[in-house]
Length: 407
Ligand SMILES: *Cc1c(COP(=O)(O)O)cnc(C)c1O
Image (cartoon, rainbow, N blue to C red; front, side):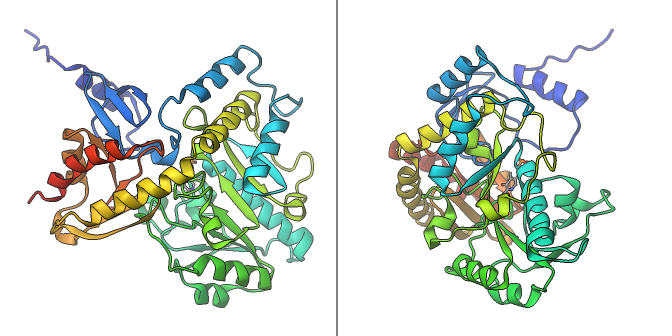
């Protein structure tokens, strides 16, 4: 007789993923069925406070009603024209994003990695056409510990061995320097350097905050040396750290700003590379594009996502709630905690090497109803949706305290 295994609902969905999906992720075993604001509910009806926010894509909170309404309304009109024709959502989206970010032009894409690729192509072409770098010689400087996405070119300059293993040959033209080191940048620049690609806080590397003043300093070096500063704020931007962009903290206006994730509030992939006229002007019709980039559904969703960030003062809330959460986390007398760091509601709790890795802490948090994910081996990232209230943070802390105090 064949033995029938009785599976819970969650186990059923997990088994399907394991059997039919590629195993390119190692998720926490919580199967989410619906979500609203900072809360998600699993298929068995258990509620969790989401402290990951889909890597900061749902800064506005899950399923924000205003973004949902915009998406549904537009889906009744027109969803995709491709850029062969124009649509009545793209222009207003450009204008609103330019006003918020103080850039002159936008190039819309879908995933973050595509917007990074766009910035790389823009910088190289600017190097050849405007700066006068000899053809094929353009160099872009990047930082150790970077995360800019998963395309073949982007992983070519990753310093994470696993991201590259088995995926060569790699795209040349990149030079790696230590993160947060302005002198290393000066030493690495050559006449062929066209860009310096950075994250103003390294999210995936474990919420690494560079020394104060570094961003301002590298912006000055880039300006002096005629190198484009390319600021990837896909994770840090759009109010996450307590201002619209991290570069606002140091009054920096990078030559290229890259956005994604929360640009759609989690409804739809929308990304963009922004620049001023001289740099964006290198693109001619036919140079670059995307079938879905800038489609009317994406543009509408992004406009609503930006309106929610502004109308609900989510930068201010991230600033205040972030300061509160960080101070409270620092106050937990845990023998495991090595450092609490971050800005706004992008917070990393790095654990000592002897703690046995962050994963077991994330599993214990899940069991108590808080979803957080380890970044790198020893850091727990706390990055809840920016709509979180003080009461919700206090509830989360009641769960986090015993977990950080466990043996
Ligand atoms: C997530 C992320 C990306 C890649 O975005 P995708 O949408 O996953 O392609 C690039 N840069 C940074 C800083 C990110 O956090």
